Amino acid sequence: MSRYLVALVLAGLTFATQAQPINERWLGRWEADATTFIVTGQNVIFQDKVCRWVGKAPAGNFGGCVAFYGGALNKQNLLERFKVAENNVGILSSEPKRIAEEKKWLQQLKRQLDDISPDNFRYVAIQDADYQGSGDCGSVFIMDKAVAIRIAQCDAIGAELAIMPMQKVPAPAAVTQLNGRWFSTQWKYGYELKDGVGTATASNSAKFKVGDEIIYLKPVSNNSFEGEQVYQDGKFHPIKVSLLPDGRLQFRGEKNISWTMSRQ
Image (cartoon, rainbow, N blue to C red; front, side):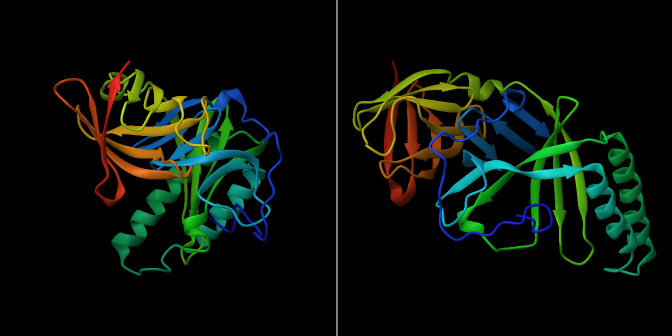
């Protein structure tokens, strides 16, 4: 996560019993190019990683991926960052073609900046415990004129900044075909899938309860999917899924674990 946009000091975790809910205007599926950003009442899903919505930045050590309201961000902050990037044109390469490409990118970036309202924005940030302190690049999200905007930047030499307005879109047909209730007779748990996100209807673990979102799927092809699911340990783990000819879902998880789900 970018140190410029999100400065966090992590020392010992405390979450409020009732995390501040995310504003309803964020809810839905947002896309820009190949990037998908999904917001539900419980989770934020970005780059196929399910991040628990916790309302505010964790105050210390935590597990998994969390999402929360960060601090304030405004157009002036972005213009200042733009100025840094502008001053760094040619710093990575003196090749004329590369410099021309950088200047073209800056022109496009300036037009995007001009479109942003001169308001203070409360940004949505993501923090992944597995990647704390790794890399100098990160993203946060603001909502401007009912449009979610991804702001990505790097603190390394060149100080790259990118602004990506995201469109609200329906879920792809490949994943909506799975909408409905599913159950595993083997593992005695189930969920209701809607547009790739599944809410538990039956639990086999004290680590998750009915009503929790426990699975996320994205289509790889019309009949194959991948994503993350909560196991009995209460943590999200990567999964691969195939829609079988008989209508069941075949799951493959870590350590070659395999199981099926049937429609209810």
